[in-house]
Image (tube, rainbow, N blue to C red; front, side, top):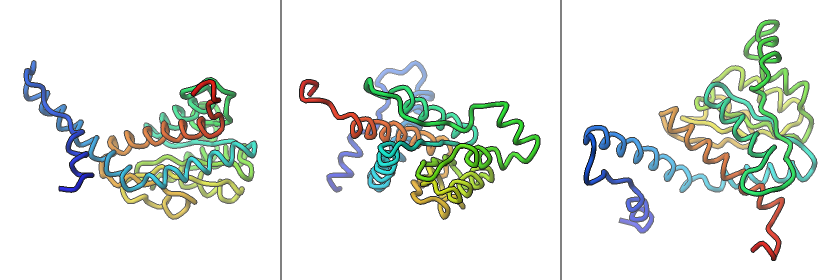
Length: 218
């Protein structure tokens, strides 16, 4: 067994010696270890992709550009979560960073869906808000959501840089974005867990790069 495999095994969850319900705790441990395994394998193979995403965002923010995030369902929640970390703060007090989740304005979303088509709910907003040099972050566990695909296409047409937080085989979005970050798992929930971890890591890297601690703080 390699040193990497040994480290991996050392971080697995083990069932408690005493359990209120062994069947339940065994299942909890099984789910936790599956989730840990997906995360471990992803970051062992794709840390460079996450670093590239951070560098794209750092460059854009330094240039006075903004981040536009979008997705459906749980991915919409991730878009809002990550945008909030940028606009407010992640782990340090610093100026707000320009990020917008395109999933939050119900009047805009429903008017586009009603008057045009649901598949245009993100592309129309990018047409209105996106500027060359901004970064579009498309979040989809399947990579096949029509409205996300249209959003990425609109972003490319307007000269935005594009990052995809994807799952499974990356779907159609993999071929459209500048940087596809693919979590190769068949489980939507496991993919989403890795996506939000990626979001947190990128937020931390962006903060630390743009606002490094002073010598007095270290």
